[in-house]
Image 1 (spheres, each protein chain N blue to C red):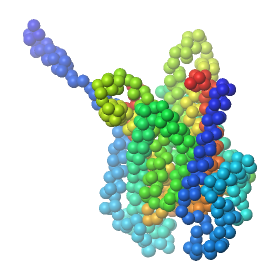
Image 2 (cartoon, chains in turn red, yellow):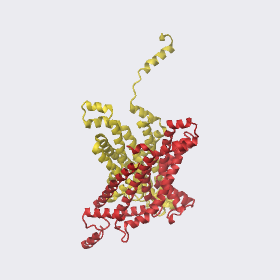
Image 3 (cartoon, helix red, strand yellow):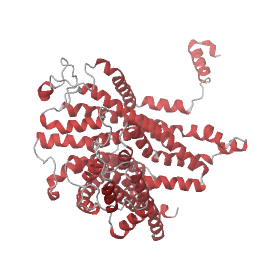
Image 4 (spheres, rainbow over the protein chains, first blue to last red):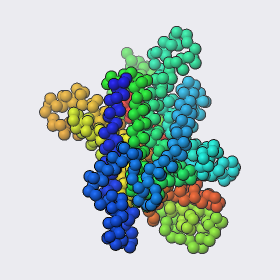
Length: 308
Length: 309
């Protein structure tokens, strides 16, 4: 297990490096930037600005400095648009908010999805099964930007129960709608995956053996059936994390939660390349880490993987 | 002996009939399975209606998608409501433009994004996966390493990056979506190719002197067809989602082009003013499209996926 873990961690490092280098070059391919305006700046001023941001250096030197700063000091350089702010400031301001509701919806979706799927599989072909399946299918077709307006319409405009946006230090009424909007769609997917995995497991020989031994149904589910059921769910958690990260951009814009997504979109609109680059790299690295963790969890649950 | 009674003769004829039953092809089997799936069939029917709506709908519109109805502009909440008389069947949007025309235009955009994006993914993903799986070795590990790396980035954000760098337009959008959506396809194709290439019939073809390229085109690709159709159809709603999501954020196509995401975003911004139709019509079309596409994809998977046979 330890050998496998070390191999996987070492394998992730070049991935992260290539990711940083590729996005760096993509950004520098871009024509124009925040300093190109309708009235061209005098060349001396432009030269000064470029020197301030290190843009007058040769490209490989810029890349090397960029890499060193990230690895050694977690410094993504200054923002091109906000004069007084570094990209790291923006990240340290926005990331905690995004992580709070992101992780919350990650857990909510996984727990409810798995519970629904397991319940549907245990009560196969009963009304509970049909209810869970149609709920899952329906939820899957309701992505965050559909759920957001519907929730606001019902709970803010019609019922007036919940605030329509804002963060307020993460006070719980401000969390409910972002979490529901973000988790509905992949909760549906998780419940469908869980259900079909559980059905397959319940039909397998070792469950029949457990039944023949006279074990109680609860014990069969908890001790024997649940673990193999979770394997496909765990391998789906990587994509779920990507959904959460992507969806958080919507939540930050639509619910004004003030997370990283807001900065990402405004940077995309103002061509603030250093912020775009920083957030993309950050999310890419987080995704690599989450994929690594799910791989390790997978190997821990299923010994066959470790020896391949 | 059987000729004695009419009944016996009929039975005898039945026997001879049955001995003439023809063999059934795999695709015929798949088609039968698909036709038995009522939900999927209904969704195909609904999809056809939707496409017809996009094609024929503009003929019934009284306003085109760019005209502004100045008469109602001051009072959209009252006079801009959906009505047959004013010609705004779906009402008017915040700027007095006809929502019926704009919804048709947006639905067309979404369907086209799904179709073209999925075709691009199909082309690139299949080529990539077949080359990696068939030739194996170092080519395989390099190609799949690239896929792994791209896989580790949230792809919607990458599409936004590409749109920022290369400018927003139809072509860029299609290329950007196509550029990131072939990853799953290539993994599936590679795995299937790996499984296929050691089978006896490939070996037989090679022993018979068939060239590698011919083996790929005549023996590998036809066997991949079922899986390809299934995953391409599952990709379409994902692409529509990605495009609508980006448009919702205001980073997608710019006016006069529009898409369902952009319309939903506009409607969601104005729903506090009592103009709910601006949200509900595009929202209905979006949900209906993804819903039907999911069911069609599921039906195709049940019919074609060799795993469940």
